[in-house]
Image (cartoon, rainbow, N blue to C red):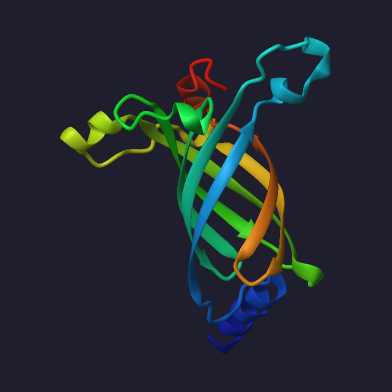
Length: 168
């Protein structure tokens, strides 16, 4: 038993997980570029873009959260009709010196929602199977306590790709 406990503690120390993590709730805002937005060979006149928001609970090196995004401009947002794709995600963070934090994680779609959801709310369910999960890798630069800037590449889940419906 002592040996097993020792191995578990050694694994946690080696993986960067603190033995006693302090929970921290993080709010996020994001601007979404579609690959076609930066592909100059396609000659797009109206690049596809979007915006989103999220909420994440960080427990040391692990974060779990919800995020939602929609295509278009923030100024086009209509509370009753704009469709928002909602994802559940989990990330693993590796904190390096100078506030540089690379991370990777997985996500699954929970549904597409409009303001009409609040007329008859229900508990969302996971829309992706295990082989349809999306993943993301990124790096966060966090020079100050709670202010950070992320750059992320994401391969969206099967559900999220279908739910975008040309919006992104």
